[in-house]
Length: 144
Image 1 (cartoon, rainbow, N blue to C red):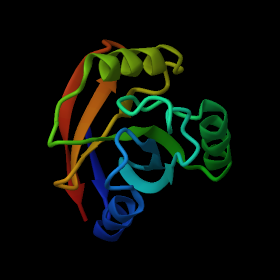
Image 2 (image 1 turned 45 degrees about the vertical axis):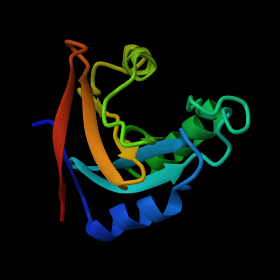
Image 3 (image 1 turned 90 degrees about the vertical axis):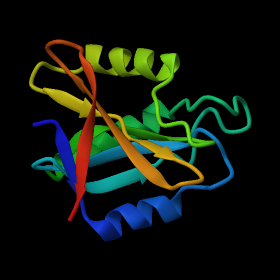
Protein backbone atom coordinates (compact mmCIF):
# COMPACT_ATOMS: atom_id res chain seq x y z
CA UNK A 1 0.00 0.00 0.00
CA UNK A 2 2.82 2.42 0.76
CA UNK A 3 4.80 2.32 -2.43
CA UNK A 4 5.39 4.55 -5.43
CA UNK A 5 6.04 4.04 -9.10
CA UNK A 6 8.28 6.18 -11.27
CA UNK A 7 9.19 5.92 -14.92
CA UNK A 8 12.85 5.17 -15.49
CA UNK A 9 13.36 8.27 -17.64
CA UNK A 10 11.73 10.48 -14.98
CA UNK A 11 14.04 9.11 -12.27
CA UNK A 12 17.12 9.48 -14.48
CA UNK A 13 16.12 13.03 -15.36
CA UNK A 14 15.72 13.91 -11.68
CA UNK A 15 19.07 12.37 -10.78
CA UNK A 16 20.79 14.31 -13.56
CA UNK A 17 19.09 17.52 -12.44
CA UNK A 18 20.48 17.32 -8.89
CA UNK A 19 23.92 18.73 -8.17
CA UNK A 20 26.40 16.04 -7.22
CA UNK A 21 28.62 18.24 -5.10
CA UNK A 22 26.18 20.43 -3.13
CA UNK A 23 24.85 18.71 0.01
CA UNK A 24 21.24 18.89 1.13
CA UNK A 25 19.33 20.05 -1.90
CA UNK A 26 15.78 18.98 -2.54
CA UNK A 27 12.33 19.66 -3.89
CA UNK A 28 8.86 18.19 -4.18
CA UNK A 29 7.25 15.25 -5.97
CA UNK A 30 3.78 15.06 -7.40
CA UNK A 31 1.65 12.64 -9.35
CA UNK A 32 -1.42 10.47 -9.49
CA UNK A 33 -2.32 6.94 -8.44
CA UNK A 34 0.89 6.38 -6.48
CA UNK A 35 3.06 7.31 -9.49
CA UNK A 36 5.55 10.17 -9.51
CA UNK A 37 4.82 12.10 -12.69
CA UNK A 38 6.21 15.48 -11.69
CA UNK A 39 9.04 16.85 -9.64
CA UNK A 40 10.34 20.31 -8.87
CA UNK A 41 13.90 21.01 -7.75
CA UNK A 42 14.15 23.82 -5.21
CA UNK A 43 16.89 25.91 -6.79
CA UNK A 44 16.08 28.76 -4.41
CA UNK A 45 16.42 26.79 -1.18
CA UNK A 46 17.03 29.00 1.85
CA UNK A 47 19.93 26.81 2.91
CA UNK A 48 22.13 27.48 -0.13
CA UNK A 49 25.31 29.06 1.14
CA UNK A 50 23.93 29.30 4.68
CA UNK A 51 23.76 25.77 6.09
CA UNK A 52 25.65 23.13 4.15
CA UNK A 53 24.25 20.25 6.22
CA UNK A 54 20.55 21.10 6.17
CA UNK A 55 17.94 21.48 3.44
CA UNK A 56 15.61 24.37 4.19
CA UNK A 57 13.00 24.61 1.42
CA UNK A 58 11.81 27.85 -0.09
CA UNK A 59 8.31 27.25 1.28
CA UNK A 60 6.61 30.14 -0.54
CA UNK A 61 7.75 28.97 -3.97
CA UNK A 62 7.09 25.34 -3.04
CA UNK A 63 3.50 26.07 -1.96
CA UNK A 64 2.91 28.03 -5.16
CA UNK A 65 4.10 25.04 -7.20
CA UNK A 66 1.87 22.66 -5.19
CA UNK A 67 -1.10 24.97 -5.82
CA UNK A 68 -0.41 25.03 -9.58
CA UNK A 69 -0.14 21.24 -9.59
CA UNK A 70 -3.45 20.92 -7.79
CA UNK A 71 -5.14 23.04 -10.49
CA UNK A 72 -3.93 20.39 -12.98
CA UNK A 73 -5.12 17.48 -10.78
CA UNK A 74 -1.56 16.58 -9.78
CA UNK A 75 -1.38 15.45 -6.15
CA UNK A 76 1.39 16.62 -3.84
CA UNK A 77 3.13 13.36 -2.89
CA UNK A 78 5.98 14.63 -0.72
CA UNK A 79 9.40 16.21 -0.40
CA UNK A 80 12.73 14.77 -1.47
CA UNK A 81 16.24 15.80 -0.52
CA UNK A 82 19.79 14.61 -0.94
CA UNK A 83 22.14 12.88 1.45
CA UNK A 84 25.82 12.47 0.79
CA UNK A 85 28.52 10.00 1.74
CA UNK A 86 26.16 7.02 1.32
CA UNK A 87 23.88 7.97 4.24
CA UNK A 88 20.62 6.09 3.62
CA UNK A 89 18.80 6.76 6.88
CA UNK A 90 16.71 9.64 8.13
CA UNK A 91 18.32 12.15 10.47
CA UNK A 92 16.60 13.42 13.60
CA UNK A 93 15.95 16.67 11.71
CA UNK A 94 14.41 14.75 8.78
CA UNK A 95 12.02 12.95 11.14
CA UNK A 96 11.03 16.15 12.93
CA UNK A 97 10.37 17.83 9.57
CA UNK A 98 8.22 14.90 8.40
CA UNK A 99 6.07 15.21 11.55
CA UNK A 100 5.83 18.98 11.12
CA UNK A 101 4.65 18.69 7.50
CA UNK A 102 2.16 15.89 8.21
CA UNK A 103 0.69 17.79 11.17
CA UNK A 104 -0.56 20.52 8.81
CA UNK A 105 -1.98 18.14 6.19
CA UNK A 106 -5.72 17.54 5.94
CA UNK A 107 -6.91 14.09 7.00
CA UNK A 108 -7.69 13.35 3.35
CA UNK A 109 -3.91 13.07 2.81
CA UNK A 110 -3.31 9.53 4.04
CA UNK A 111 0.45 9.36 3.40
CA UNK A 112 3.33 11.56 2.29
CA UNK A 113 6.59 10.34 0.85
CA UNK A 114 10.06 11.61 1.69
CA UNK A 115 12.60 10.11 -0.70
CA UNK A 116 16.27 10.55 0.06
CA UNK A 117 18.57 10.67 -2.96
CA UNK A 118 21.90 9.23 -1.83
CA UNK A 119 25.15 10.43 -3.39
CA UNK A 120 27.56 9.42 -4.78
CA UNK A 121 25.54 6.24 -5.49
CA UNK A 122 22.61 8.16 -7.04
CA UNK A 123 20.17 5.85 -5.30
CA UNK A 124 16.69 6.73 -4.06
CA UNK A 125 15.63 5.47 -0.61
CA UNK A 126 11.90 5.94 -0.03
CA UNK A 127 10.35 6.77 3.33
CA UNK A 128 6.71 7.49 4.07
CA UNK A 129 4.72 8.89 6.97
CA UNK A 130 1.14 7.82 7.64
CA UNK A 131 -1.28 10.60 8.58
CA UNK A 132 -3.45 8.84 11.17
CA UNK A 133 -0.68 7.12 13.14
CA UNK A 134 2.32 9.35 12.30
CA UNK A 135 4.26 6.12 11.75
CA UNK A 136 7.34 6.49 9.56
CA UNK A 137 8.25 3.51 7.39
CA UNK A 138 10.77 2.68 4.70
CA UNK A 139 8.89 1.51 1.64
CA UNK A 140 9.40 0.36 -1.91
CA UNK A 141 9.31 2.14 -5.21
CA UNK A 142 9.10 0.55 -8.60
CA UNK A 143 10.73 1.76 -11.78
CA UNK A 144 8.32 1.33 -14.68
